Length: 245
Image (cartoon, rainbow, N blue to C red; front, side, top):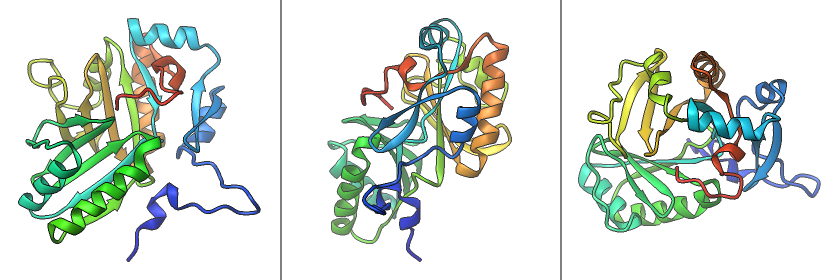
């Protein structure tokens, strides 16, 4: 069965225009007063009407940002083949379970020894997907699937980000146990998920798209209880493609 329906890049123009790509919960953000902007063909939340305050909470407390626009590309094979693909497309990187690698704007995250998730900038998704498919074709049998529409993703940012996670998961996120670039497939808010420590009090939470509304509510509520709130991409400096995720 083909999985092109999971790839937003496969959308085609109708009546002379290509539909924007949208977060699974765009209507929720609009109800909360979001101002939308465009990034790489996506509708993204620029801010919720007070970008200065949103920047402030990311420095003093915790902000939650919908990053559904990030590309997600999964490939599976035997461990040796997977390692060969990663080395080919990620500058010779070698992955170890529990730790992700960052290369040219993309995070390479080992879910298992034979399964890797690449998390890309929205501008780079097509390029990275093509590179992975080419490497997989030359490395032997491997399955490559774009999961951008199947996985939601939120950034949890600020000095109280770990405290927000502590209200939703048993994962020990103290720096000595979950340092920069740490990656873990783990239950969050009693749903399957994955957590990546991008460094600098910034974490990426990935989850099934069907849980987008639920996870947004869980973490925005946790943030507000800590003096934080939902924030737009402007607060993180991500509107112009400057993301590190």
